[in-house]
Image (tube, rainbow, N blue to C red; front, side, top):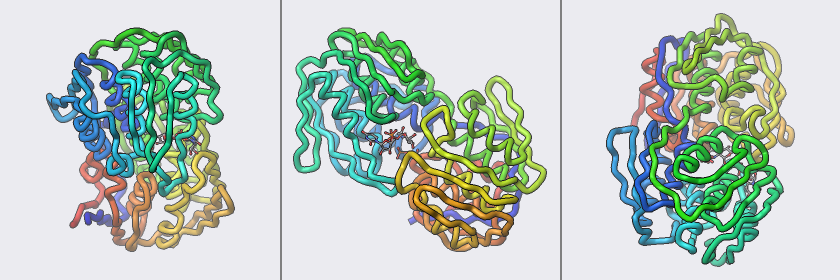
Amino acid sequence: MQKLVIQGGSPLRGEINISGAKNAALPVLCAALLTSDTLRIENVPYLKDVTTMLILLEQMGISVLNSSESEIELTAAQLSSLVAPYEMVKTMRAAILVLGPMLARAGEATISLPGGCAIGLRPVDQHIKGLRAMGAEIKIEHGYIHALANQLQGAHIVMDIITVTGTENLMMAATLASGTTILENAAREPEVIDLANCLIAMGAKIQGAGSDTITIEGVKTLHGTTHRVMPDRIETGTFLTAAAANRGDIHLKETRRDLLDAVLDKLTEAGATIKSGENWISLKMDTTPRSVNLRTAPYPAFPTDMQAQFMAMNCIADGTAIMTETIFENRFMHVQELKRMNANIKVEGNTAIVKGNLKLEGTNVMATDLRASASLVIAGLAAQGETIIDRIYHLDRGYACIEEKLSHLGAKISRIN
Ligand SMILES: CC(=O)N[C@H]1[C@@H](OP(=O)(O)OP(=O)(O)OC[C@H]2O[C@@H](n3ccc(=O)[nH]c3=O)[C@H](O)[C@@H]2O)O[C@H](CO)[C@@H](O)[C@@H]1O
Ligand SMILES: C=C(OP(=O)(O)O)C(=O)O
């Protein structure tokens, strides 16, 4: 199993490019299921989750052509299998995103229930509730969702909770439904807007993406298009936080400031100087950061996918931080590992109290999920001595070439077997 070895203490300096967003690329890849034409996708990040999604789509009969490392063409002329097996879904929960488009296009879909994972139970009841409201017959048997619908019907769906992939699944299904679908209490994440833009370019009629009410007027067919995936706001935030935690001075290109308001506000509160232009953000931190309190919540509030990285920064910051996680019930798995590096963190329910003003010490730690892994990388970069991070396959799910990018910024980091 591969590990990362980090020698702490080198400040990050220089410039790198940010990749396309994992959480935008995955639903856009699934949108290819909605048409028999070719969908060309640009700025696709080179990630394990993308590879897994492509294997799944190929198993369903989609032909995949890579025209370059970050450009992919997908053609779903005919779907040869309507099953997403457990082996695929268990390694990547976003596989649930094939449910809506497959059902809308082929009238049938069988998908393994994703099951629980490290960060929480993550049920898919809202996806199922929405598809049932659109007339699908759904049975859950032997751990699989079996869905049937000759023709989905438009419906007025009020989601019980805000769900990102739930909104995306239902929005995709509704594009080919008969009549109008209204999704209320929809997720407002920028990745939902990115998907809507791709679907609109494919001929879908969608209004309101980015607000909490999305209206989709079903059309008979969708056609091919070319879509460029938005920049990864979480990768951007991860590099900025890493620089803020170790007196860095970095310039990130191919990204967007407007995607990261809540994160940039907190980095400024921590003492960083942030500048930005049309497609770049730079951060300079001259001192030890100040501790920042935060509370995760759906967009545009502070993202849960940045909580672990900020915790690593708070461990070495001046002061004490109160950090509350409201999205996932078990997203403090990194606490145990950070404590092994000498962090002073106390967890009470969904709140972590992080006492800063200390030196982290390098040691052997284990990645438990994607962003927990990123927090250990940040901690390792700020720590004294050597940190060895095990189980980095979690990191590879969501960060493209992370050690190359960090090495380019001056970090002492390498991958070993
Ligand atoms: C591939 C992708 O885009 N992943 C992102 C997406 O995950 P994902 O879309 O899976 O997360 P959701 O927005 O659905 O989850 C939010 C909360 O709703 C709950 N829930 C969700 C669906 C449902 O049917 N029932 C239910 O109870 C979940 O357990 C969780 O507590 O949004 C999360 C929240 O911003 C991010 O952390 C993930 O990086
Ligand atoms: C939780 C995440 O991803 P996923 O929903 O794919 O597990 C994440 O990107 O932090």
